[in-house]
Image 1 (spheres, rainbow, N blue to C red):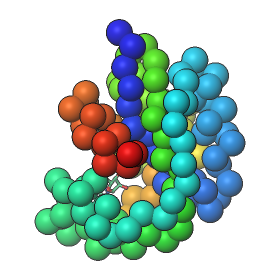
Image 2 (cartoon, protein in one colour):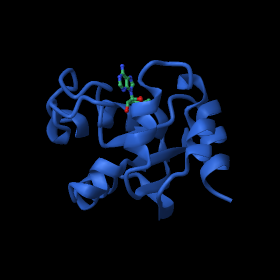
Image 3 (cartoon, rainbow, N blue to C red):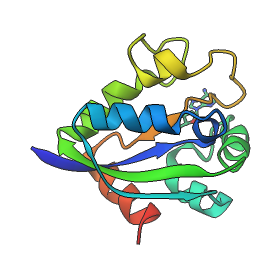
Length: 137
Ligand code: CMP
């Protein structure tokens, strides 16, 4: 089934010049990027995006990380893209992420202050709808 999902290259991906490599992987897989923009997220936007994490002990570090520079926000489209993109990203913790995944191949295990893991992807159809509406007009 063709789906849309919200995909993001986080500030470490932009700062470490991994944008081209990550987009290359998205396109190599056959997914289409139907919208894309760069912006530095505000704390207000992050409070909505990460509403479920606001009370977690790592939240202040997460905001510092995510406001440290621009991100690339994208809407991706493709067959089963929600699960497929999550598989391509790999596990949240770069140490656990398998080789072959973006985080497994490119995220640095020692960047642990806020788990700087290069990319984000919606984890369900409902989250994809919500996040696309939040990040795009
Ligand atoms: P993601 O799963 O895309 O969304 C929540 C983010 O919070 C996650 O990526 C990491 O960047 C960060 N995160 C999740 N768990 C932790 C943790 N235990 N400590 C620090 N940061 C975390």
